[in-house]
Length: 132
Image (cartoon, rainbow, N blue to C red; front, side, top):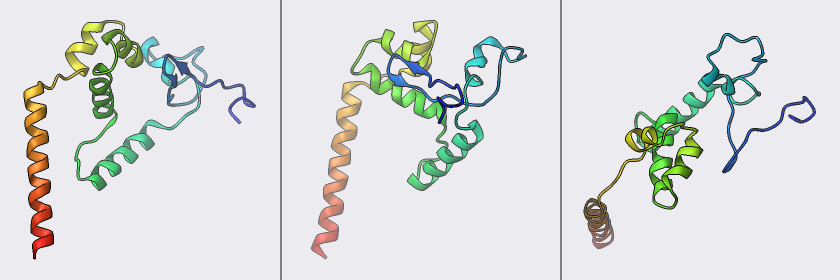
């Protein structure tokens, strides 16, 4: 359908990437760094924000938005690939931005502690539910 209208999907280093907004930007007053959001038809930003907010609310996680997803994704990606790959995926011109604002390091001791507490709480919940 998009190809019939002359719209080509945006393809980044990791496959298809979502694009927002509509319209021709040839005579746009939109800043250059924002123009990629208008080049092709896609999901409206307000729709994405509404869906994310509702999904977070349903999951019991307040404040879910696109930035939370970007930061979570980049933190997980950093565990399996290079900072340069994460930088490219986020379309940052500077790796410093990626490191300082997106990739959050979780010390191994904290991760092990949280996983141990999680296991303990799950086992206690299972004992309480099955004993009575």
